[in-house]
Image (cartoon, rainbow, N blue to C red):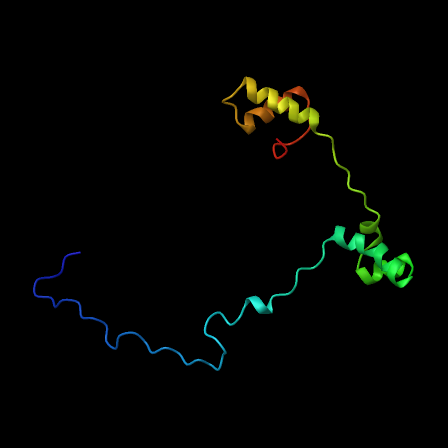
Length: 124
């Protein structure tokens, strides 16, 4: 921007930087020891599932009481994960990518969809 003729140049700010704040009686300066106040990571469902038989063996309690102590619902305790066999899909993806080098995952997904694979693009 242009200044008007005869205008005074910009004056520096008065007073400089503000004074530093007082220490506020903390042991060390910084973020207030944020890491020390973090909660411990809770156990996941699979680890809690493993904990139930161990509680039953150690304390001789029933399965229901052990599940209550470990905070595991019956549905979570008896759940068996189902892993889908994807070897055929993997082999077909490799065949497509070897023959059609320039195809990306979206185009490979379209070809798989045409062949009848029901899997979505995230699996490809």
